[in-house]
Each structure stands twice: as C-alpha cells, then as structure tokens.
Image (tube, rainbow, N blue to C red; front, side, top):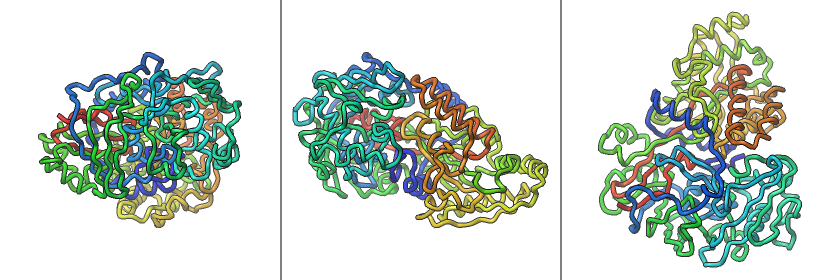
Length: 602
C-alpha cells in the first residue's frame, strides 16, 4: 500500500489520501469532460492492457524524439525539495519523476506512442521483462552487457541482491513493501523478520527466496504466484542500489546513480543540479534519452509561482518546466482558454479515483435497495466543482482509473456521466419500495473548504430523494484514521485511492477484500462478499496481463453494480505547462505527469 505523500503515484494511504484530497485536487486541472473521442481512445487503449516486452522490446537505444537536439540547460521549478534520493525510500511522485533521470531498475515502462498514452513493461537493466515457467512463482532475470554505475564500475547481480536485502533494514521505512512481503510470504510489517537487519550484519536472504548463481543472473522465488512482478520491479522504489557505495542512511542524500544523469550538487530545500552521467550507455537503455546537458532545480516554488514564471517565458523561464507542480487554480481557465498556449500545455489523468463508501457494517445499510437509492440520488457535480471543476476532475463510472489496464469508459450503471446531478426521482421510488422514506443517513465529511462545499450540496441531493441527512464533520488530520475504523458510525463518507502500477491488482484487493477488514485497513466500506473474495484469489494468479485486466475489471463492475457498496465519484486530472524553448513536452500516463526523459532545448 502506498506510503504517505503529497501526490504519491501510489495507493493513497491514510496520509497520502488526506493530503491529496485536501490540497492536491483543488489545484489539479485538465482538458475537461464530455470528450467522446478521448473516452473512446482511453477505453481502447486500456482494455488492450500493458504487456510485458521481450528481449527485442528491451534493447536500447530509446527511439529518438522528433526534432530533438542535444545541449542546453533546463530549469525545473518545484514546490517541494526531495526528501529522499535512496531508491528504497522513494514513494511520492516528485521523487519518482526525478528517479526517471538518475536511477535504473530491472524493468521499466517504455512509452510505445508519441503521446505518452501507450506503454509496455520492458527490461531496463535486464535483457527482458522477466521469464517465468511455473505461472509466476519463479522469475528469472539476466543482466545486460555494458551496464555501469556513474563511477564506471560494472553493475552485477551482487548489486541486485544487495538492493533487495537492504529493504528489510529498519532504516528503510518510506518505500513500497510489495516484494519484501512476497518474499517473506506475509502481509504487513512482519516481513522484516525474514532479514531483520538487512545485509549489514553478514546475513543474507536464502537461495530459496533470491538466487544469484553468477554475475549476470537473478532468480526470484515466491511461495505463491506473483504474476505482477514485472510491474512491481518497474517502481522507482525498486531501482537498484550499489553494494560497494551503500552508505546506509547517508545514501538518501548522496546515492550512486546509474541513469543518464548524476547529481552534481544538492542543497536540500534550495536547489539541485543534474549533469550528464558519462558512464551511461544509450545502447543499454530502451527507455531514456540524454539530450539536455544540465537540469537546474529550484525548490519552494508554489504552484502560483511556477505558473507565473513559465507564463513569463523570458530568459531562463523560456526553458523552464515543473515535473510535479500543476497550473495553479487561479490561472487554470486562462491557460486552457488561450489558443497560443496550446503547444506549451499538457493535461492528463492522475491515478486516483474518488468514491463514496457505503458503510456495510452499519445495520441500516444492509438493505441493497437503500444502497441503490443512495447511488442514484448522490450528485457528483458538487464534488467535481469543489476541486476545480471539469478541468480538474472527470465524472467516474467505475472504480478503475483511465490510467489502469481494464478501464472501460462505457461502464456507468447509475448514469452518473449522463446525470451527474443525480436522479432523485428514481432514488425516491427505490426508497419508498424499501419502506425507508425519511430514514436517517449519517454523512461523515472532511473539515476542509472543499469538504464543506461538496458535503452540503451532496446532502441536499440525497434529501431530495427522501433521506434525512445528518452531516458530521471529521477533522482533516485524523480523517482517514476515523473512517478506517470498523465501528465508525458513519453511513457514508468519501475516500480516494490510486494504483501503484497500471494494474487493478493494486486497487481491488486492498479496498474490497473482505479478509482485509480491520481497524486502519483500506477496506473502508467493509465489503465482505464471498464472490468478490473468491474472484480476487482467481485474478491474482493470472499471469497474462491482458486477461488479468479483464478479470479485475469484472470484479470492479460486480462491486459497483451488484454489491452497491462504493459509488464512484471522479477521476483526478492535472494540467502542466512549459516554456516555449522546450521540446519533447509530453504528459505520460504512467508517470502521471510530464515525462522528463524526452525533454530537449529547442
């Protein structure tokens, strides 16, 4: 599960979701909704799934960007300094974007279209995306020839082994934990007992878990099938660490890099300079390019500051961009309405999906007809409006984001896309049928300006259908602590969640597996459906990513349409801009923002 962060490209955990829903989304933006062509393209793209590439797809160099030329310096304006540079500690999107330039992993995402919408998982340091002969229990990787660290030393399987062993050490506490849990065959923090101190006291993972028979070969061995390993290995948090140069806690400020750029200087909270890594070999890398001579990062630039500077477009601002800052809310409609800004503007989806949870642990919520009445009555327009309107949000039909394989744009069982203001007449009919007209509904909402705004209007919509809605405010800082309690006394409340990689395997199990119900867990609606649980187990073993996507989507549709425990509200979007002197400016759906690997100075 995703660790707390501002815009973690990660499953939104208690912290991250609070932060995102509180701040991020009110500043987000994009192209607006009602774009049938875009919906159709998204549907076709995501139903096709993200495939695992072979050796040919994994061979460098990366395809050239049209019109690109080498040289020049890019200024990068960022709100937040980088708290972590150690791959094992990286789990938020600004650090993930930086990671694309400085770190490498066994696998990675290669964009297969110029618009950043289509991808495949390929071998990055490995010769392919991985081979399994036993349905995903054992995965074998072979390292490419000629791969080196920035100091010129060869990258070997000893570095890969060390990378994964150090993740068990207590000081690594901010990154993803999927692979560690898979290795230990245990959920939660118990995985650390497999290698308590990491490799630092001379102990190692047994060969029955991770084997490195020679300098080039790495074999992962799991007790049960892990068909998503190629996706997981592509996370920034599983980029590799140099065994020889590992300085433990100090590595977080001065890591040894393997990507096309290395850190020349980092003044935490102020600035960072990246220069070319001369030991990076383009012919080993199918994903990245090295056009720019230097990246100069400046921190503490709020969204309004970076937007204003880039709009100015003179001097260094003409070659400025932000990897993470969106266009601020105050300038968003101006930017999107200005035809001359079109070539300098990119928009796209973030991985988050908002949803109204119906709390199934509440006695009154056991009646499915009542839940259907809530689903039809609930207006989504107030939520979209509270966070910046259709430039920042798109009305959702299902629980799978447009950034995730299996997304189906046509799925909309409660007609939210056609009637985002709700259908009170249909809802009233259902509530009367259940004999529950006038029933009390406790609506827990987050005490922020946005939460106040959307909950008031949503409550009014539910009252039109015959509910007696009691709004109950929850402090922002403890919001997720409170709604994640099994006995929380709220009938309905809103949460948001984002995929850790473009597979619904990082969405459906944490949110809807009934065996995950406990205080603090992410099954907020407390759904415990035997069909959902069994279907999760089946989908988790499917090794073909396209067939797996279909299976996960079927579960999503069953939950929304047949269980009626979670009402989708909106898909989150954002808009970013660049100076007119930059080329290769593309929004990448997997990164969830600008793709720094393609940028060049015109």
